[in-house]
Picture (cartoon, helix red, strand yellow):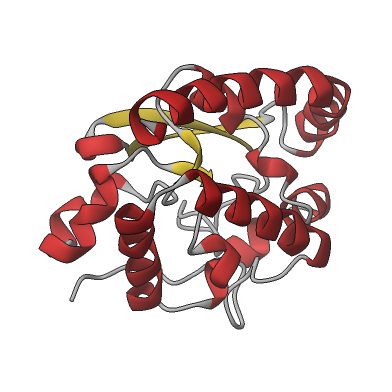
Length: 200
């Protein structure tokens, strides 16, 4: 009952309330990112959701589009703006995903939606992360986020799928608040983001 009825209802109400309460901060961030990113405050990207259904995720854009002399994007750590670094450190870049929750593509709690380019690389076990809606935060995020290995991420994601409950979601929400306050696990070791997943 929780998984099919209560969780979707709580997701909608939480996302709606969150957007209302955070609206002043939302507008302020849009203003600063509009300046920092040459008029592009938002980042849109296709991601796989429940059962692998593709949707367009919305985030605040924390990196600019600077390229090298050959026209290729610079490495992430060179494109991360000062404003973007602060927004990422405080996890404010995740706020627009509340819109994804309202549209029914995401949940507040669930496995983080990864890149569509990884879909063909998953084995059967790893692909089980798509049995539930992806989340803004999840079990893997409160257990290391970008500072853990891909194998660990998948273990945590599938464990969540098998143990999904109201109590577990509350625990993850509480742990997320603590993680955000401490800025734990935001960056991978010696990098701004985790290394791309290259399969098994």
